[in-house]
Image 1 (cartoon, rainbow, N blue to C red):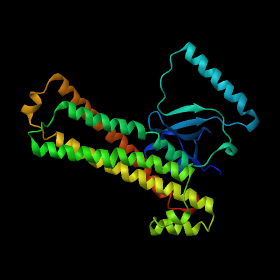
Image 2 (image 1 turned 90 degrees about the vertical axis):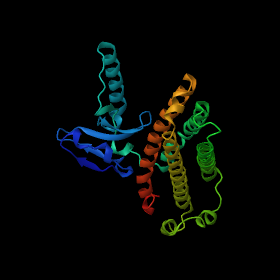
Image 3 (image 1 turned 135 degrees about the horizontal axis):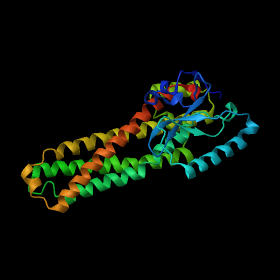
Length: 285
């Protein structure tokens, strides 16, 4: 697959907040001839701009080595300031580019599931340790138990089911007709367009089913955590003043974790939106 070349005046013209899945293979060339690409950084969960050194394919290994030597020398001689705009990458030719890979995209999201499950368990544990709503406060206590039940059933359990479903789809899938019966009309139209190519059909089903499963579970978790955060705001100020230092810290830890988890979930949902658009086109499979 060839990369689309976009002419720009300056690197500032690249707005990563508006980048979609379809843009990840684009190459941007400024007026000075500098070439830039896009890369998703798993560590910071954001899209980064990378400067690409252009070279003939046979020269790439040599230039790559020179870049590494240069970086080592710079590190040894002077402290490096972080360049928030872009980083320099090894040489790349059009022939070496790779198209968007739905399986890798799904696996990136699945890679966060274990941490989210542990986070949800930690939130519930801290809320319990805070003794936020004693048993005698029946209304709030019952509401809290319902939320915890939803976190368990619609959150943790469904995340585990999503992991199991991915294993089924990738390692021991059932027949196409089994999955086809579960799909909506638009998904069935995509399968019809794939004209009986079983490999392409299963690739589509894998991506479509996992996209829906992840979207559904993370939307449910977000709603449940929002309800929990709202319930916490109803706490009687006098009750919070009676908390021990241990209980107060447990509540603070839970609130911080709720906020951080909801931010991460928003990030997952934002990534799934353009993926949903990607799934609407049979040509992507």
